[in-house]
Image 1: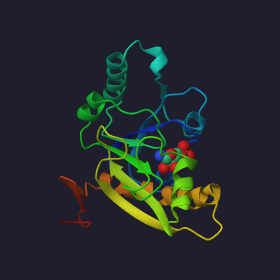
Image 2 (image 1 turned 180 degrees about the vertical axis):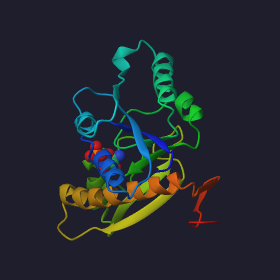
Image 3 (image 1 turned 135 degrees about the horizontal axis):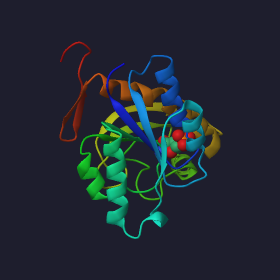
Image 4 (image 1 turned 30 degrees about the horizontal axis):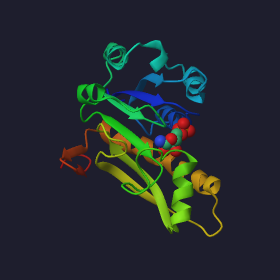
Length: 212
Ligand code: GRF
């Protein structure tokens, strides 16, 4: 096990969180999930956290009078758990510049399309897959990228494709993409765990295992 301590942030069902924890359990990912952060009480991700015995924290905008207070609480929780990497997995609240700065280069997100297409505000859930199909794309895919303070804007760490099949609906395309997400996210986190992700502006290279 590497000593990479990951916090997963989620707002939804938590299937990516589940895939990451399963990868840790079977040894494909040598890191620890030390904290799950959610911004709504009734989310599947909290059930997944319970199932795997991972500490979880609910932090909502309603609990805090202003954005700086929310940020202070979030940063304090992350520091308490000694978090080295934040993995956003369907987290729908935008991170403020203060949080992005505090964890510069240590926040990744997974997006269910090939950025920079079909990203940005409003592009989440089935909206993404509907837009891909309506555009007439022949491929879609998954992007794991570093996070900056704009939606879906940081440089890609990894991208993979899936075909868009004739007759696909947003649901059928979403299912194909999600299956790929579940494989790709643990693989990318393992690259971070091995210290193989090298950032040079927007160009991210993956160092060979055992040396550059
Ligand atoms: C995934 O499709 C992810 O790409 C997007 O939100 C969805 C989260 O799903 N950012 P889950 O909560 O991990 O099941």
